[in-house]
Length: 202
Image 1 (cartoon, rainbow, N blue to C red):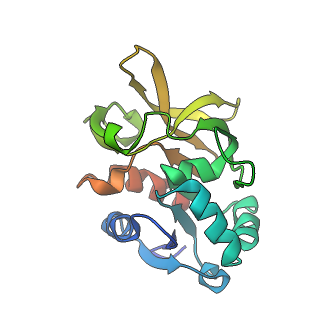
Image 2: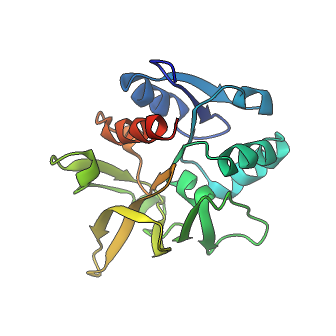
């Protein structure tokens, strides 16, 4: 692997520039991915936030879903934030019947679990894989994880107003996902951990 791995950011919707900034700060070259040819040579992939059903439709419309599925199935490292987490789930709760996902992480994810846009909030999380300092996290119409398989590692949880602990960050092999948007903060440690995954699976 080169000193600066090439990371693709799905550029159909969402915080593309913000993810690119955080990746570049961690020593990556970044390519915006809109068509299948953009996948050539990428050594990792980021699926940003947005609206998961719309992103699913756009992936099929652009002819990207199957080529990206093949790359992910072959072990391409991938990180999904918010809607990206939903796209990586093996089961989507409260999803549309025509909604598709890449099933790269053995988990059940509930869409909009924290509420609507007006229920968006920020919180500091304990995320030991990124160090001892609290991780600033922005939640916008965010999902949470209700079930994980045996091979999935929980990276972070949050306590809800109802007193329940909800899983909001996970990792399985070369795949990682967060409910929150780290790219909307100045903290680039989540992307740094993803770059560690990329190098580990090179």
